[in-house]
Length: 193
View (cartoon, rainbow, N blue to C red):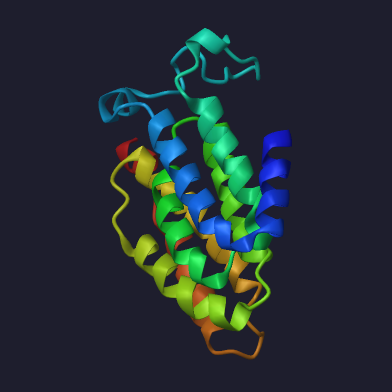
């Protein structure tokens, strides 16, 4: 948390460096992510991942989830310094990061996405950039549990975005309809049972 606050202060002092900082955070996340085969096997049951009782495994058993969680905290912390034009890149990253099998990481990534939206000072420029992106993400078929996690995070972020649309804007009805439609689609887990 302290590192996230320090990065936020640095980003606020030197906004032009934020692009480089974001790219480094995305690289750190990639480096800390388990290989696709390990991710497919499921990180929740792996040593080092948070246990159901909230206890954590030892540092030696960590599969990288702590680093990925730190990236999410940093992303949320630098949100006030992010420009509208950096949002599409950040959400392209978040589309992958929301699929994290460790619940704490996926939740922190969702919170980072909401922070990026809520800290924007130009909603009139942000909504046209992100709404089509979210609609595309929600229109993709959810065939795996990872897809369900992404869909859940995108729905939460889309809801945060909807708060920035003026109530009399015709897009409000379209966004609400899209959110309800996506929530009505059964998850992959429900479809299997």
